[in-house]
Length: 386
Ligand SMILES: [Fe+2]
Image (cartoon, rainbow, N blue to C red):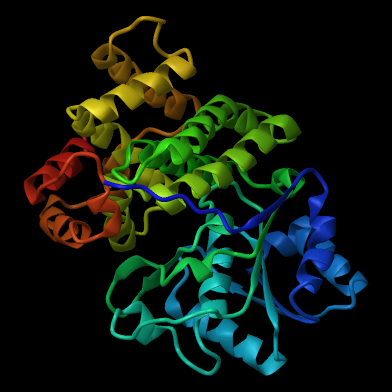
């Protein structure tokens, strides 16, 4: 299929780059809504740094701090209402992927309206919405450089990506790896594994092309190489930087290439059992890779990744090297203290049919390199329980 590539988001990267949030935001207005999580950005001092920079640039800020992980639609409506009352001209998101996704959706929905009819698919969302400046404090979703907002709908027990057009890309992403130094171990692991899955899915996606391949391959290699160090020595700024920039590069890759079956299945699975997104993805990844390795192009790309990470020796045949890619990932997860099995969340095999039915229509599933049937999804879920 033809492929396209777009990264309209300006990236400002480097240790201490949070200090530029005022200047970058000021280019879009003088009244800002700042969207963040309930505690972490406040406790780490990241929110203070952000507000100080905004104040120094003469920007009046209102803070909405009601973002939880796996954010529900109600959080978007509450943030959007705060923006309306504050007469915000620009939205600044500082936090993990949830805060950025809530901010992105709140910036996109017309003032005074609820996100619900747009999310449930009946109503087309038209831009341009409010401009968004995204400052991630975790290294995972890549939401700072994508037009997607992943939201949960408790009313229908669904989790899906709201993506209405290229106008939903953030205007600026500020990538300050110092903001991730205080990220707790469990969040570093789960977010890092999500980013790694996203890089690998973008690499083999049907929408992949040479531009996304370059980003996805480098992203996967940087994250796989440096994530253990970032977990074992959290103050290591070089390791933190590799994982932080790698996560954004993976986001740039999948924003254009799209994802695959891991994400197609992980969304309904995670929504049903409350499994942290990155861990649901990591658990499915080895099984989906073994399935996809029957596809020649995907197998060859897994082999390139294994070679790049020295997980496979030079000259190894694709079939052998792609098996080594899976083995390398399993060893990496083990080193991170994560064992990829669905048993730990007490999933019930009687749900697998419903999860398969919910996963098949997703955009991610349609971009998987090898077509997957309902029976294939169920077989993957069963193998992930072992
Ligand atoms: Fe993800």
